Image 1 (spheres, rainbow, N blue to C red):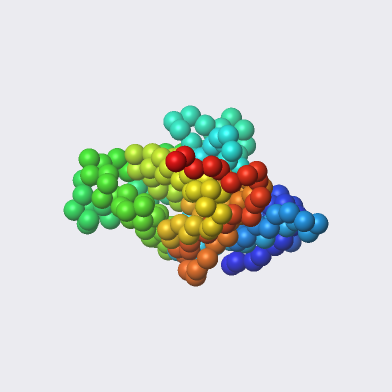
Image 2 (cartoon, one colour; image 1 turned 90 degrees about the vertical axis):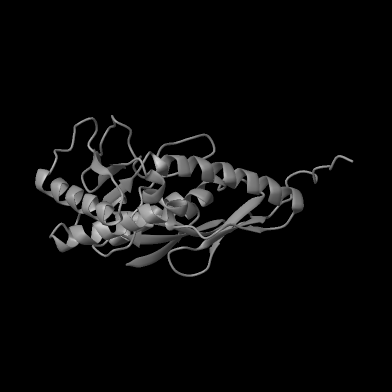
Length: 253
């Protein structure tokens, strides 16, 4: 299910969604459709994607705070992390974990790849699985699309086996964290280019999590705005110069 909410800030729009939907914050993903800054009517238009048992790809809301990056949700953990309930560990579900591990390992084997799946983290409504392989590039795929596909079909399989509320995250060689860091650098680089040229720039098609990261990274730049364009899961983010924010940079002769 997809519903849209508006507010003067992203936080206000999310609070409206929580109140109307009657769900906890970690029960749904947030995708910023468009942000409008400046003037009297400053709003953030936020699209709320509610997690169901369908096969749509599910992404963690963040991996950790960094300067200039504003995100929300739970971080993809390292070997040790705090869970939703504090430092108390979420007890494992051996039957569920074994079912998913065997399924992922079987898919990898059918791909002709040697690999081994293990539990990466456990949370109340989300379980992470890490795939270790000497052929990790094939498991990850271009821009992580193969990894996303494994995540999607694993979620579908879990629902088929009766684990309707299970949210599955798949990772390989810490790809999702490395991808985030790369996108943050890209966002700032393109913003500088847009500021200098006073034009807009359209990024490559991205999944909802990657798009959200671009939006939130540039959210506080007063002379830059972002919006998603296109249809389907993989949309493009346009980075737009709003300015002015100081004089046009002088080019060296």
